[in-house]
Amino acid sequence: MELNSRQRAYLRSMCNTMPAILYIGKEGVTENTCIEAEKALEARELIKCSLQKGAPMSAREACEELCEKVGAAPVQCIGNRFSIYRPKQEGEPVIELPR
Image (cartoon, rainbow, N blue to C red; front, side, top):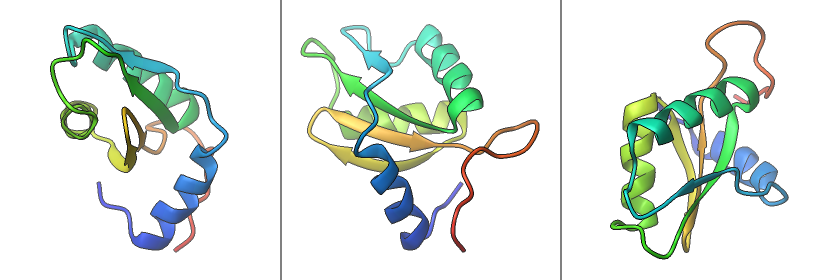
């Protein structure tokens, strides 16, 4: 999934006030992490994730790996936090993206 710059900017502005709801620890991106990300993306469409100190990878690497596994698009990666987006698979989308 690809986002254009206008859509990414819109999603970044929404991420500013969001707390991180998914944490990646010393085991990296595991199957359980992917399951939790799937559930969160289906409910919210946009989630912020955080890397903990013992994580074996950088935030950018974790973002790329998680996006690939759950079929999401990266929105933003700053420091040890990153945000990802995926529209709902079933039902009406929660977030209306600009064209």
